[in-house]
Image (cartoon, rainbow, N blue to C red):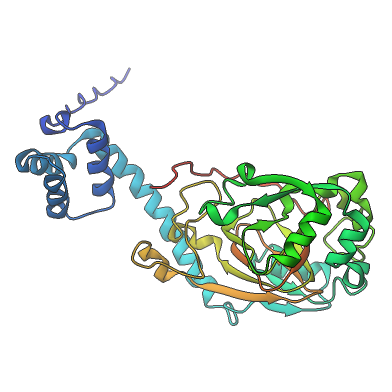
Length: 353
């Protein structure tokens, strides 16, 4: 019977690291994992009140700490995955017209599946909503006349919170839809108030007439499921949805006004500093390359949705949306049973790191 080899005893933690507080210990480990220059780290620690001898010893000894060595091994695995994403992105970008969001009409079901769903690329369909009564009927005045007496949950005070989308629950305010229509019409261009999908008003029977204003749908959709998978968006020019990715695929039809959409490939996720759930702290309208240097390597696609345009948003694509005018739009995820649209993401919960 073969003998089981004896594993070497774990190496003890170097002495200088025991003298650091947990916060400093974590700081040294994180900065070494980011491959910061040891001399710069020592200077920072000394300027913060650490003794030069302890700072130099702690930084030098971190690389030999057994816990840190384990972290380095996991980092190697992560960097391999990042390189796989980067190389696949290079292949994607070699395709002619990669940086242009196509505008198409007459797309068959088979082509929609092959080129856009399985090919994972966004497209604007210009003919899907050609028969929608909503295109002729929806307006702020129509909303007030038909539904103004009903209560809705809107987001108010978004300008006061840089993380307004992540904190949307705390910004929720209930008001009559008529009052919100007046706020949109009188408040000018702003991101401060917005009626978004999170209100889920289309799940309420009293708003069902809005669904009757929807006509033809893309061939991948099951109209019988629309009432369970539709969302309504209404707000002034200037409303913004920050850079994020959804966890499923969707269609988004612009009914009134125009919206600008900016996209980043899911294969470039490692460049977007995604530290909290499905959000990135980056503003593609005002990129901060000093704070987020990896952003320099990101390829941004852009399109403007006109009334009647329907965007297909493929799985995992990052997007940032800005309303250029008072806007009403309608999104839906009622894919047919043979087009799976449930996916699992393991999202980070690190926060501001």
